[in-house]
Image: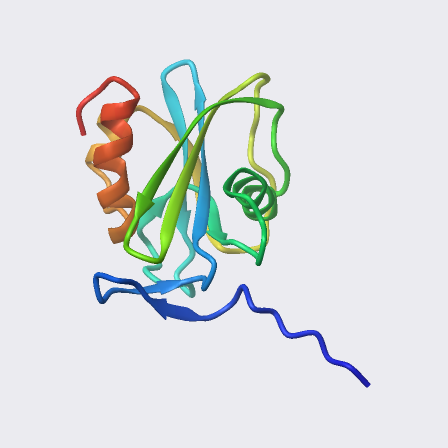
Length: 153
């Protein structure tokens, strides 16, 4: 009997000496709608529970950032709206990368019941996001992404 081993799970140490979830990197989906960004408050039982970030997670072996972000976001949000991809921001940590896939929602969307990694979802302005307790990894990326979006963190 052959057992499938999920190589997308587990921690790795990057070139900076930091520990990250996802041996093949990770990706998240940042959805925009009329100046608002869909944010997710992390459930208490997950790593950095209670902090805010975008839906996302570990990439599978051979998976692109765009497809991984889409898959993870759909799992965590209970579905996705149609959206148009803008740009993908890659935050390289030396052998490990977090990719933020940025897109515009093309239709109204209210998150449903996802996989339980998020306890709350909300469409927030960048100013509101700046006042939230952010997941430490997202906080670092948010500064870079906010500038890319034409604002200041």
